[in-house]
Length: 148
Image (cartoon, rainbow, N blue to C red; front, side):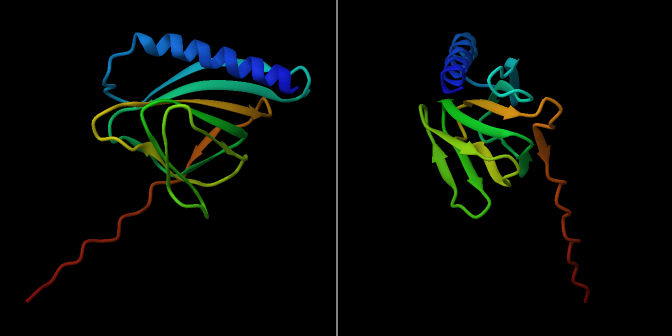
């Protein structure tokens, strides 16, 4: 399976890199592009899905978790990331991390306020798995007022 997975990752990264060459230098909003979705022949009942995610400068997502294992590879820019119980870390081009299915991803976003950041995310999951589930928005505490 490792040779198949290596080939799939190489193919997905190549497609993403080809697609990002024509992208403007500053993204206006987060973009998600599906790169690959295929059954894993040596792991029956599992699929490999690859997507590219581009964060605009300063953009981030709410805390979330994934319904499959995720391999994340930074293609450009710098991504700020934190898993529950771990410190915040900033990853640059060529760096990667692994998120086991169900891990609470508490921080995910672009570390730069001036440049976009793009990452390749490769999931291995059951075919029917919900790949990303965002936490519910946190309720803001009521505003305090002072009366005299």
